[in-house]
Image (cartoon, rainbow, N blue to C red):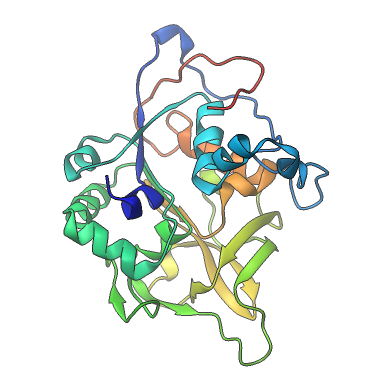
Length: 270
């Protein structure tokens, strides 16, 4: 797998556990590798960990840890066939829009992703994983995206003194009732991005929440089994982990029941 693809890895969840471990929900824990929230005393505790632990707690490592803590196994996607075979697909997307689309197109994964999404199979895009769903982006471009949702990814306007990138906590404004965002209206989640998509009449039906930073931008989308968020759930404390858990919960999106693996009561690093 190329280094670039490794930095924007797609993941799908394996069904590997016995029937007796099937559950309808799990309690969750927020520790130093999944920050506890905008006012958590744990926010800086990551810096007190050994270097090896800090490396594993980078964005993708944090997401791996959060998913595994919720009771699921993860398999990295390395081919279009892996995407087609996936039952649940999580696309974190770390990197630049143009480079990501170049890799997806070159490895034949863009068409596989479009096919997977068009079949309305469980999909969760995070950060760049949301942006790539749109028509195109100004970043490295213009560059064509997957074209699933109408809209152009544009850089925040810094001409009025707005600090770019947008880094930090921001409050969600829920615009559509969805299982993933139940109880999340007004809750703070964590963003790290320089580009965003503006709401429009063409993409209005997809939008499930917006945030304000200079202007209103799309913070999440929802349509059937297709979900995506601009913020980082693994950095968004209890709210972010609750959203992730809801996506993985059996039947939460009208999909078939999947199984969780047994887990220790004490969270362990992967």
